[in-house]
Length: 167
Image (cartoon, rainbow, N blue to C red; front, side):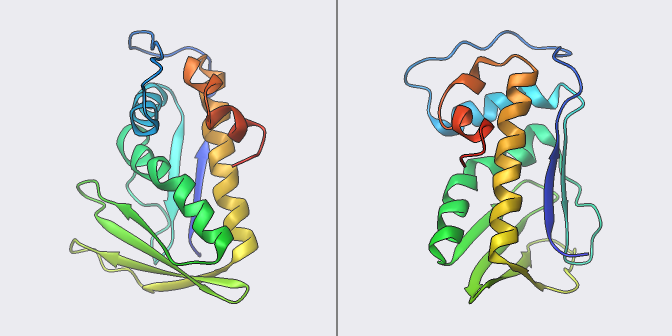
């Protein structure tokens, strides 16, 4: 059981609640991601992370996925450049930082916990190619999920590019 992150797309195009979202030209990436995750959180969409001794991290779509997606473009770019990257899962209850360090064709991922939870092991390795594929698929699934629920956010950048597999 190594590090893995996935997103299960919603099965329905209808939201259970919430007002329609209108996009403003000045809406920044983080604001759009928060709004999108709030909408997806009202569906049966599910976010999963596993690794470091846990089969299922206690993450949700509305908040934890938002924290992940906000950092995803930089993470993917750094993995592609083969440079060090960090992903801060800062939400209360998770409070973990993942450090990604390139080691040739592999990426070493170190999990640092800021709670009583202890990662066992604290370091895992994955091929750079597989990690990039996993993160790109997560981006694509996120963008497609927005389209499934009819969110206008899906039509903006970078989400429309992500939906076609260009993360």
